[in-house]
Image 1 (tube, rainbow, N blue to C red):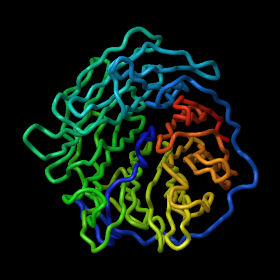
Image 2: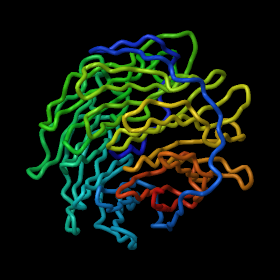
Image 3: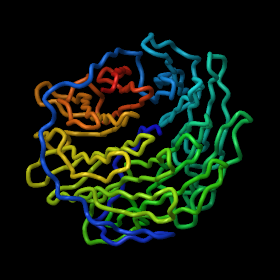
Length: 452
């Protein structure tokens, strides 16, 4: 599973909701234990090495199963958007690949085990994907949808080597926002399939997760009818696809609800274990939320991953490895202390979610922490990265902390300056983490580390 570059964006106004409704069966489990504060680790656990690729804006960062790393740098030349990909294998230098002209932001990318690179994007009037074969050559660009759509598309590659793109369309003359999907196999792109059902309008392209068998999960958030940041909790919907490409009917795991105040809510991500178990993470107001469905079951069980009074969760991150070990992180703003903190909750493979812990409480005001992202290595090492306000020199720094499967969070490394509200791209393969971002000079920086 490759975490999406936008999986922790702020979403829609929401309330605390206790009851859930589903298009199948959804159960609400016992709430997680109350949060406990714990210090971060006492030693650095990762060594970071990086550099600068060039002027422009980060388009994507991803790592294939065999370790091929890809970073895209977007720029506009003569009024035309273009993405310059850089590729490398192992510890060698990044080399520029052929320029992808016409690709726009936001964009998603994935690399398969052989080193093929696919980039997908949406402009609001079309959705397209481009394929660069291993070894170079020329890009092959395919228009996946020509009806008006919400900008952007998500992309995933599973163990069988097939790429899947997912996007949202709003057909002409309608107000629908329908989730569609297509996959790329050796014969080319499939015909688009409709994933969502009536009343399951998607606010943005869904989060995708897959496993080595070719099964896939998609999760998306539906906006309230009244718009964003209102008193309506957004709806969280999940759908699964078989290795044969057949989508099951979607299930609503969190239903929309009206309350009297204005709150936050959003989707962190979705994951699929090697055994076919589904995990989805989201937040509403001051609660982290999780849904889990075993491969042999049709029932999603939901639970709280901590309830944080006198505060609100404003962003979240999620990552899971093939064995099912997972980490979720929630960026919490405290009303009474005017501080930001990151609350992490972990689940070992085959286990249950633990107590929320505090990874680096920041005394810095409402904008102290932005855009968290997470990774989980095959061995269970978790990585958390975010942008953090620098009280000493101003501006924002990229910071990262790691935690071995049986350890504690390390001291947070400051990795470099980042442009305000610029996303951090993350990827990992063969135990190496890749981070990339747009720095304060509007250049794209990268850094890598072997996860301990």
